Image (cartoon, rainbow, N blue to C red; front, top):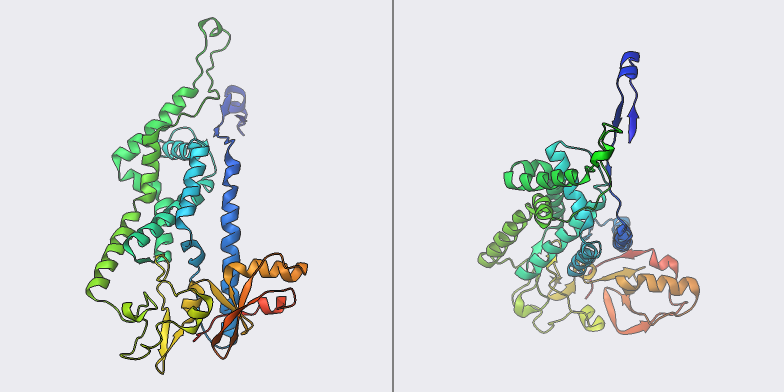
Length: 376
């Protein structure tokens, strides 16, 4: 509460006005530290991607990989973590968002809360649902389109809610009922002491219909992703593209496949050495080619290598992206903390035997010179 002071002396002497707003405290807010874990993993993968892009640029090659590769690996896990957080706090933050939006739509008492906190939760769930839709339809959902549609829905949720009378009615009704719960009941014997009423601290009641109505404008744009995925699926069924590498196997069609060429080599040397078949990555990920044919020989493309979780260090070592942290710790500590295997690369060919990483196997200088290239 604050006492409003007027510049006009007459108003200052004759008017006594107190003003305030609602403050919401969430005792389970600490569970959202999981977003820091997501952020560290995402920032690390972005740093790796930027290093690869920069090294390719130094070689006068323009290559930009998919920044959503790390996210597409675990869409279900991220979505389940967010749902677990909501259950742990008994949907408190969702209730506060519904209360805030209802107060703004109904032009009632101001509710102070950080909407940015609730920005990360729906985004993670939105991306997870897009990834699951892509997996279910065996299609690739454009990450840029997904984020754009989410931001449009989240930032314009109040405007969208005004287009839906039933949604607005439920959210505003929830905010009004919460306001009425806060009005303190003054006993009759105490009414003579002061003519003023007051608004007290009270329990925030969970309302499933209000929460659903609050989230509906955010997720209403997901229908566009569903239509996009279905149209893409139908189009690919009717007009199959030979340039889209959905499999490294010739029996399923490979990227830029030449007729009758390379039939004797169903796998690249990269696949045979690492034991990692070039996967048909689906979900929230950009289109890319797994392999390409050069003079009748099959090569794994730079996109295929990166999107399958590998990078090349200093044009010499083929390393799994997930092992970079472990290798860095091994080099810095001088101790082989765990068994990590890498593969030697020479003349665009991968050695068929893996090497165990020791503190002297490579240097930090090698790790910062990451790139990708075609491999036989």
